[in-house]
Image 1: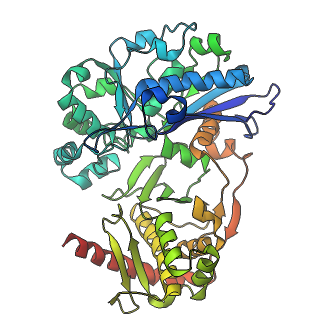
Image 2: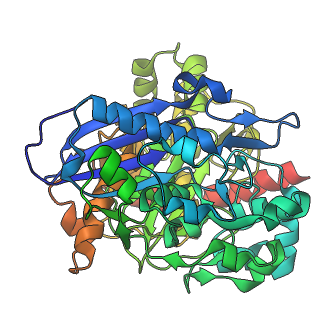
Image 3: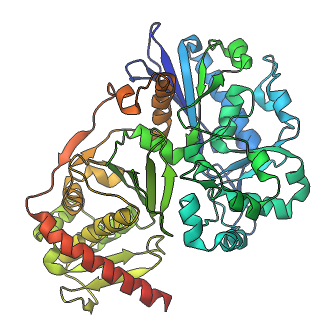
Length: 534
């Protein structure tokens, strides 16, 4: 898509996601004027990826070729040029990358970055710049030993969460670096700088090594999220000389510098186009979904995810606390649930003849609270809580083998949202008078499901019509980065963007119903987890 944008300023967002490289440009009024993508499997078949990745023989190690990302950038910029996109209007750009992936720059790579010849594509110029050719990414689960070692080094899972915002996770960068340090010592020795995918992408535009931003840095198990510095204890537990290889951290709204002359000469970017710090995809989505203090975003997709804007985090061994990408004094929490839309679809098929219309009727057949019947529906092993199976309890907390179809439907939906509120509150989330719930994902099209969401959380639910929210969020962040030095807040900068649409308000009196149910659900969840552990 391309739209005429005369001579007004343009802000560019770039997203190095798992399967695609995407770009979105917005004008000064934050209206989208261009968007495009390169799909790795289809457009770059020479790298032999499936869904953008290489799954290794052990089925645990998952990587992506670094040069594939570089060549994708060449391709998308050439596409934009061929379609008539006028790069001279771009005043600032920012971007995002899939969280937890890491890139290992070969010694001498920065010198080359600073002296790129615009006569050649990037993937030719940077061919020998990476000590590790295939980057470990978020899908990798081969670092269990390194995770346990990291936790033990700082006093256990909760101690690590207290420092870094999360217990040790296999996909997180600290354990990935520790594995490379042990198993590939020569490559580690030859590494001049370790970037996240986000800061790697920023480095390509900047023409020198870009700093890791606070928000993406807080997803590494290496950063003290309160002091916003590297934790020396965590660094020491993973590798030697790691602090120097990681470089300095930077605020997420920082202007890193002007664009490399390579892009000025090859594509016509203005020489004063600013590069605003890149961040991770989850923080970028928070920006794209326009969360404010007290808000919660609920994505109802194949997996369900909640993002929270919080001021006073309470790290636990469940979920994650990241630094907020648009307010350096705030935080964001993230919790992911595997049993999302696929579980809802199974219950729809089993109980309402595969009809969403009948599903909605069944959902409304019983009042809020479902006569005290509660259910846990974990078709696959859940992350939070760690349990599997279907567990049903009647109003007397007695486990029962089945519910009538209408009770089953409501037990599923109420149970999913009760769990989300319980675990959000454990991470420090508080419902404020101005709280909004921003709903997205496939199930957000069902107003009856969203009514239950509003009732359980006691807050109004809005829907947002945003495709590629992470990429769009970075276009917003690019403009904010330019204006942040004047004291402008992110919310001030994005006032012109389209407002979310109000869909549901909590019904009167539901808080009195759900408050005791929250306590019961939490107690029964502990029982379910206890049974599973046994």
